[in-house]
Image 1: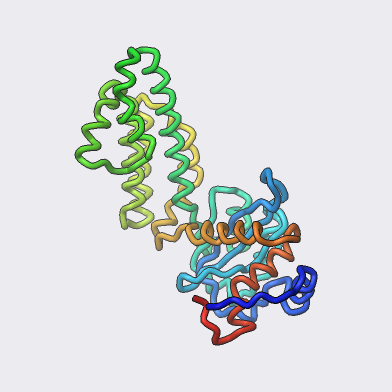
Image 2: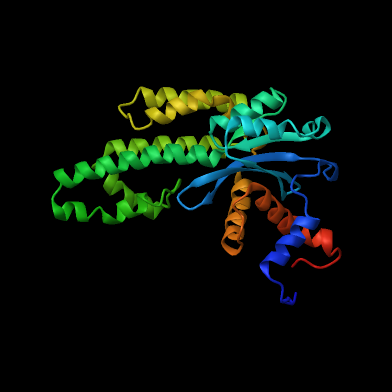
Length: 299
């Protein structure tokens, strides 16, 4: 589609947006909310001045619902309470990371009527970080105990392990075994990590997932490994939210994708330091064509 550039300055565009774009969501225009997503984004460099983005996904289409100033639980609660009861009943799940502020806000407003799903990719990152910690400590030990030539021979295996793959080919297994043979702890840690990934990849019920995760925790705690201790505490504290993933396998993937869109918007726009301005621009970006140029192709 061809683009015609008009000689219009920024202030004119800003004035047009203020005139025609609302600063809050018009709930009467929404039929259903589907899956809600909550996440934070920094408005300034250095991770300062956070806002909370609240999005919703229906039929794989993601829209902005609100931009809340800060990430405090009280502010999020105030916004969630503005959602009409009829629309609350259309929410199938709420996806977020393991931030207590968001989880507790959803619990306060939705009670137990809507499942809160801890994003599986955030959970995966946590137990992967445990494995990374083990890998670093074991490599530090091997540098001291092995000769320079022996350690150099492990270079290919170390490089392969850093890719954080859940599965290796037959050829890769031969390469990685050279490292595992001199570091049994690292081999065991990798096996535990792969087992947990296998649970998340399985199409099982939340109840079965809880049983399997409990078995996993018991196996790890009876081993000599301590690198997963902190993660195990997280797994125990948020077991319900983590295993809610297995109800319908919802994740925050759509939230992360929308956040990337916001980051691009911030780079090409000015004057987005206020939550209301950001909301207006996101509304223009996501609904502008259908609202102001219906029938125009968007490809």
